[in-house]
Structures are given as structure tokens and as C-alpha cells.
Length: 397
Ligand code: ADP
Image 1: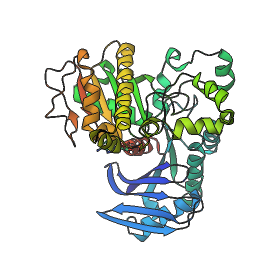
Image 2: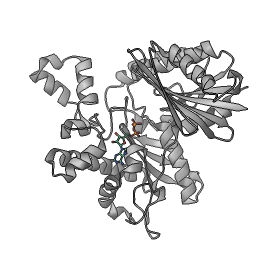
Image 3: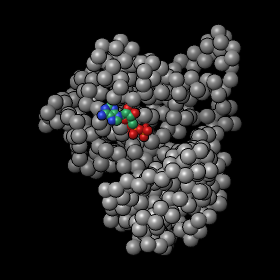
Image 4: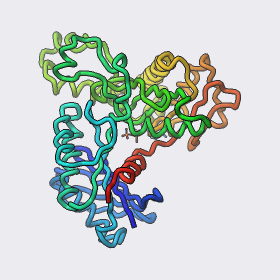
């Protein structure tokens, strides 16, 4: 029996999902947290049960060992031979990786060298890859890149209007992120439209804690809101999104201690977005609850977020010169009816006619009236499944 593990490794966590392939059946999933800290926690969900174990997990190799031992201990597998492939989500693939790749020593080195583009993530991916190579040396490892889908963007979209030397010397350009998700939901949207994907113009809105919007033409990314790093684009939970770059020197002139790369990164990555404006939470549920209670800061945070999403959709209607469907996905996009409603209420001019009876909690698929010129779909994203499919496609064993 063929089983594939899909891995999403962060600096201190490792999320995993075990699939029976090619059936695409999820057998078990889990989360290992607090890697490198005291009292690591490993949670496994299978057959409707949840098992939690607290133990020291000093590094990713130990995390991988715990994961694999759990699979045996809980009788989820009877032998490691059942595992025929491991797929790793990789945040930054730079200009090198245009598609998913089999992982050998060369690829690991390249992913490590791309760490400046994803300093928290790429080193963790490399640690997880090395751990699997050590513990399961015979098993194929595949890397699936968040940036690969966006490598089809034309230079006109990915270059920044700054001196060429910064691109030539340091490859400062737009790479985007969430590519696996944008690609998956665009493909699902084309199916719902009943058209070959080559004939479609789709705007995909991945709105979770991190959030990005992509213009997809004929199934290919032609522009996306995130930039050199996942800080660019729309406002997010704790990230600012796009800003006037002059804000940085303006602040440094007034608070000289901010003349430090880490301090600046912190302000715009961790202290901004919904959290910065509401001073309450980065979670859209809390923001909406605050707004409903009349909290002015939560109301402003919500309205600013909606405004930024609307403007990006508007830009991308222009980039695509039209649009067949707008897709909402990820935590906020899939679950928040008030958020979707507020965005779509401002886009009626484009020919969007939402059906309030369809735009409800838990909906999947079309939320517009049959006569709506532009369709709006809610499509749950499934990055883990795309990873497992790519392993299946590329594995040699
Ligand atoms: P990540 O970017 O971390 O993968 P997710 O896509 O899981 O995030 O999205 C997480 C976010 O989804 C939470 O921070 C929360 O704001 C939002 N969310 C989840 N459920 C709801 C809901 N019912 N209404 C509004 N927001 C929600």
C-alpha cells in the first residue's frame, strides 16, 4: 500500500498529513509544536481520535522521528515500507524552482541558499528534508514551492521600478507566495465555470492570517499581491502589506533606534495589519465581534482590510482586462460571510450579483445569482493534497 506524507515545516513547528495514494484519502494528520523549546507537543488525529504527547523536541530530526514512531505506535502504519514518498512545502524557490522538484543534495543546497528570501522558513524546510533523508533514506522526497506558480509572471509585473543593479546583484523582484493554493483554487474554479482553464480569467483571494491575491490568466499567474517577501500586498492579520517606502526613513529620522533591519521587520510583520489598527487582535473573528460591539478601532481595521482587498481585485480586473470568476479561500475567505459581503458590496459595478441565500457560513461553490456576469466561488484550499499529488507524480519508487 502506498502512503505519502505531506510536510509543512516552520521554524518551531511541523504540520503533517498522511495520505493513502492514489486514492487521496487522508489517513491521519498531526502537528508538532515548540520544536527547540521546552515541552514540545505532538498531536496526532486519526480515526476520529486525538492523541497528544508532551516531550522535549530539540530539533526537526527528533520531530520527524517522533512523527514516524507515532505512526507505528498508534498502528496507523505497520511498517515504514508503507511510506513511499514525502512532500515538503517550501516557501521560497526564488528564480530557480519553476515547478516541484525531486530533492537531492543539490536541491537542498539551493533551498538553503535561498534562505534570505524566507529566513524563518527555508532553514526549517531544509532541516525537515535532512531529517527524512536520515530516518527514511530510501524514500523519495519532493519539494513543492509556494513561489513556483508565480514564476510565469511577466517582468512587467515582477520587476520593481528601482535601479537595475538591485535586481542584477540581489534579485530584488516580486516572487509572490501561496502559489500552491492559488493554483489549486484556480483549477477548481475553471471546473465550476465549465470552461477549459486556458480560456479563463480568474482572480483568486487567499485570505488567511497571511493573505494574497493573484490574477490568473489561462491557468497561469500573471500578477500577485505579495512581493519580494510575504509582507507585500494587502493588509493582513499582523502585516502591513504595501506602504509608501518613504515611511521607513521618515520613522528612522524620528526614532533613530529603528535604524535596524530587525526592528523594521518587526514593526511591519508583527505589529501592523488588523492587530496594529484594532490594538486588539489579528483574528478576523475578534475584529468583527469588536465592530459589532461598536469598537471604533475594530471598525476601522475591518474597513481598511476590505478596502485593500477591493482595490487589488480592481487592479487585477484591469490587469486581466476582464474577469470570469473571483475566488475566496483560506481561513477568512472561506469562513467569513460579513467579510466577503463587504468586499463584494463594493464591486457590483463589475457585474457581480451575490445571492445572500448562497453566501452563508459553510458554503462551497458559487455564491452568486444565475444572472451574475462575474461568478464568485468559495473554494476550500487544499495545499496538502496538491503536495501529495506532486509526490505521486514525481516519485520514482
Ligand atoms: P494561515 O494563514 O495561518 O494558514 P488560515 O488560512 O488558517 O491561516 O486562516 C486563519 C485565520 O482565519 C484566523 O486568523 C481567523 O482570522 C480566520 N478565520 C477563521 N474562521 C473564521 C471565521 N468564521 N470568521 C472570520 N475569520 C475566520
